[in-house]
Image (cartoon, rainbow, N blue to C red; front, side, top):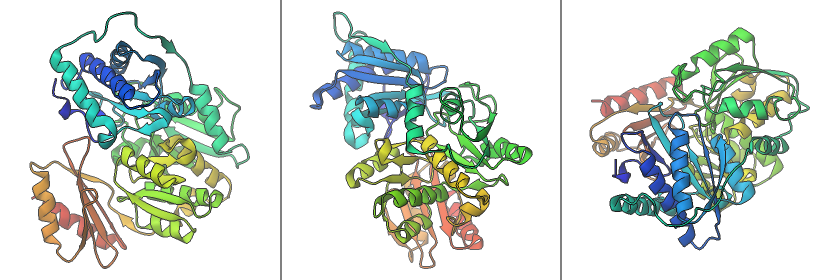
Length: 461
């Protein structure tokens, strides 16, 4: 439990509770976070903290809060929130923050997504490795209370209404045609944020008829895992869209920072198509702007961005990497294959809710069904992400590279191979799980299936 290298990943903390980490570790991480902030030259007096609905989240967040305060910083505690609500607080208040969540992982997991003031990312190369080493040193010393004397203030504040109001200012849905929308919150934090943003619990009603699925907050995930990237977890949403004759279905992951989409037929709309759709909307407001996409998104994304006068820039997979590239290039928008969507007007942070609002606006501004709207942004056939557990990830990646000497290789993030006919594949180790992830795209379904099966034959042999 004391080896933090097992849980501090490339851009967040993630592991099983209590096997890999517990409240003692959380307190050390909180103290280390405060130390890192105080020694970084930033003027920081307060840290904001939020947590999701997992059973272990309140205790871990409280212990982390104790660690922060023991190092002389106050804490603004938001209680229950989505990850993008934490980013809203960090951005609007100019405070560093920590969100306790394991996102889409099963119930036994928990984690922390941390950011500097203004929702700026904290990743392996931007302070997370130093934080890990500081926390490890504290754990090795076995210190329970790190300083003496009274603790700085702890304030509790509800920022849900402010979060909802801010998002409503960024996309106006008041004038769209009426839409029936099925939303699967997966017993995650979407059940907390969707009624406030898209419903009428906080703000005036929108022309949306919301059909809720699994809005009860339950970190045991009694209905299905809160991981919409797995097609098995979209089955209930697809059936409900067809049953209710809905215009669109939306599925949020556990911490509600990602949003997946199905059309009126119950068919999935790829995150790449959503990235291209939102990019076109943002380029209409900001001609010539930069759009970030990760290397797993469809080749259609950079093509469409260029066609609409934008500048596409490819980034590594992972929120801290893409946020850094967003800030470096002043990009107006960024999208990932995993349905993370990033906005300059949201402090370069990711928010699935804002992406969903863009989609609803685009759909509600015209009369065609979503399947027809999405068709303009889907040009290729993709495999989706396929996971394989292998004993030696590096050896398997090398074996796949050797199998295709004719392909152009790129090792920016795992192994990407591009073929002369426009097909490509990416094979990379997961940053959060012991898996090798494969994505394949090709101009035709037959070519995609053939390439996918060839590569899986090598990986799983």
